[in-house]
Structures are given as C-alpha cells and as structure tokens.
Length: 430
Image 1 (cartoon, rainbow, N blue to C red):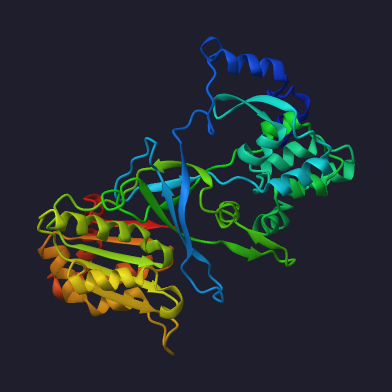
Image 2 (image 1 turned 90 degrees about the vertical axis):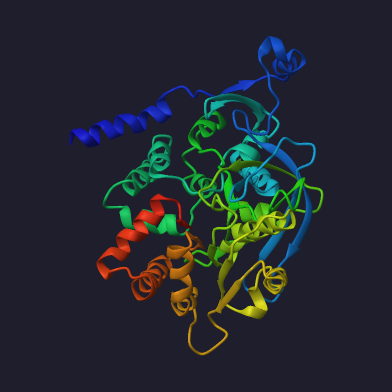
C-alpha cells in the first residue's frame, strides 16, 4: 500500500542518510575548552537542562535484608548548589549505565571508548567520548521502540535478519514485539542478536534515545532539613520469561551509590501541594513509597507549628504488606501522632492478618471524619502510590459524602470532580 511504501522510504533513510553526529579531535575540543567565550563552550553534565550535582550524605536500607523488597532512604547534600525545592516537588535523578557493561559492549561491538564524538541531542551540541555517550547520555540498556527496529533493519547485511526486524514492526509480528517489550529486550541486546546490522557509533548516537531522569517524590521539608533533600526509593528487580534477571536503570545506579558519590539531579514541580491555609485539614493516603511526599507535608507543618502557626488536623492512611517489614518512617509517624501534629494515624498492613486490609477499608470506617474534614472544614485529600486502589478510594469517599455529608448519590461523583478542579482532591499515581 501507499502507507507501507512511505514507511519503507523512512526506514531506508536511517541507513542511507549521513549521521548528524561526527568524530571530533582532541585538539579541537581542547581549543573549545581553552577559549569558551569564543566558541560558546559550556561544561555541563546535562547540556541544555537545569541540573545540579549533589553528594550522597546518608544512605540506608529501610527494609530487612531478608525481605524481598529493598526500600532505601537517601539523603543528598545540596550545599554549595543553587538547588531549591518546594513541598511536593519531585527530584529527577539521572542514572548512569554500568561502566563495566558499557566496556563489554564496546569490546563486542568493536568501539574505541576514547574516541571523541560531537552530536546534537535535545537541541544541544555535545562533545563526549564514545564511552561517555554510552554511559552517561544514551539509554543503551533501555527498551527500543519499533522505530529503532525498523531503522536497524536497513543496516542488516543478512536479508533474513533484515526481514525479521521489519516483520517485528508489522501487525503480524505484534505479539512477539509485545513479548520483547515485556522482557525488556535492550538496545544492546538487539544489536548483539542481529549482528549483521552494524550501525556506526555515529548512527547509534543519532538513533538511541537519551537517558531520561527518573523522578521521585521528595520526602523532606527544606525548612526542616536545610541544605539537604531526601528520597524514599524502592529497588525495581524482575525476571524475563526466560529467567534473565532485570534491574531498573536508575535502580541499578542508586543501589551502587556510596556516601560521598556525586549525582546529577533536577527538580520538577508537582500538584502535591499543601493547602494555602495552615488551618485547613489534610488527609493523606500513601501506599509504600507513595507516602514520601506526606513525610514532607508532616515535616513542613511541624516547622510551621514550632513557628507559632495554628495548624489544622492531619490524617495519614498508610498501606503496605507487613508492619514488621515495611512500616516506612514508622517511628517518626508514631512520634508525630503522640505529639498531636498527626491527628489520626490509620495503618493498613494487608498481609498481617487472614483477611486483606487496605487503606480504602480504613477510609470507609472513617466516613464521618472524612465528610467533616473535607466538606465542612475545606480539607484537602491526597493519594500517592500505585494506580490500583484509585477506584476503591473514590468509592470510600463517595460513601462518606452520601452517608455523612448530605450529598445525593447522583451528585457525589460530580462533587469529587469539582474538588479535583479546585485542587482539593489530588492524585499522584503510577
């Protein structure tokens, strides 16, 4: 068809076109570094992006070593940087690829890691060594799109391999392509599998997508921890259908950190903001590491209370599997609860009893409380964590409004939408 013909033309252009990346010389790079004003040279970890280089100041595992979920608390020293953040912001972490794996790939692919390459990425001209491109800039061990499969087909010298790559981009090959996506077949693995396709490093710099930051909700108040920013992160590990161990790109990077290591980060604003008035009630529902922004909320209000502000009630619904294994920041929350700052602390450990107990069950039991704080006292509700409980949480809220808030059944859903529009019912789910 005409559509397929156009698609083939686009595919061929990847191999036929001259790469935009070029080899560079040490002398030329030295000149640009020696005379930055004349050449417009800037030395940056992530050219064109507002980033900061911070140092790891504290690092500890929060779950037992024998537990199957590794959740870590990380603190970064931000002193000497311009990094500032607000309550609810997220920290973008730029994880690097494993250097040993990059060296192994370079050896197998026949690349000189010290060769300098200049290319335009994300609108910025960058000069790096091949090793740096593959370690710090390109998502070599990430998951390629169909576009890369199609482009790679045009480089294949073996016609059967070319046909297989093209087939994987069609509707006929959709099932296998989906399986490859599920198994997280990487750029590196694809290049090794279809060995007759050997795009040059210049083409690879053009074709492989850049490493993107992984955003984590900030788990600290800058007012309580000046010069520091905290994260609560779960390590992501899984196995492919063939039993190959997989690790999230940023997980591997964070797992390997030590005290003093320097990390490139950025700050991203979020909808997770405290209400404008300190007196407004705050109702928080967090699952696992989804409670990270709520630790920041509580710390911020603790500081404001010490400064003399009259702070409103705070209710936290926290859910995880086992109290003994992953009651994250439990001692802190218990202390805030005993002090009265955290007015209500509702815990749902789903696997600590025969019947499953989730945060929505605790919320339904608090129907009268929720209606009073949200409807009668202009309170704000926040949910952070995985997507799956969103519907049940909404049902619990509808039950609260209709049972104790004098809201008609047909109007409850509309009311929740109105609360969302006024930023009083905020979801940050993933």
